[in-house]
Amino acid sequence: MSLLSISPLVAAEFEPFGDILQVQPSPTVMINQGNCARYTDVATLDFSDGRAGISIFHAHPYRSPLTLSMLERHPSGSQAFIPMSSDPFLVIVAPDNDGKPGKPRVFLTDGLQGVNYHRNVWHGVLTPIEGNGLFTVVDRIGHGSNLEEHWLDTGYQIVF
Image (cartoon, rainbow, N blue to C red; front, side):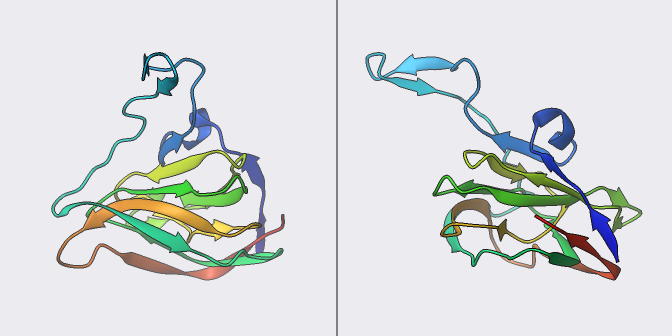
């Protein structure tokens, strides 16, 4: 079993897989009589059909070491995870390699970042590592399956 290293979640490294949802150095515009900074259009929501829906996910935190044995992707729509606490979580993604996931990469959020996986991007399951594991999720709601799972021949180990 190969060991995967963990990197901080930064835009330059994550850009091929999706968007990082976080406050930027400068807001797009100030609203509400100057009392609220608006950061506009921070993620690309992309659906082949259906509509955007907002759901709540409540996941149990994982413990170290974690064995990664499966990756998934959503061919019909992007999927955004927005934490409802300030607890960090792992973000696991992989490039596509002829319809199968390539070597996974692991990122650690700073506790205030969310992510939006682009449509058809291989990723791990929601992986909180501490706290309450509560997330707002924006993804495709519609008919038909929007999930493809790939079970790895050889797992990876992630130590955090």
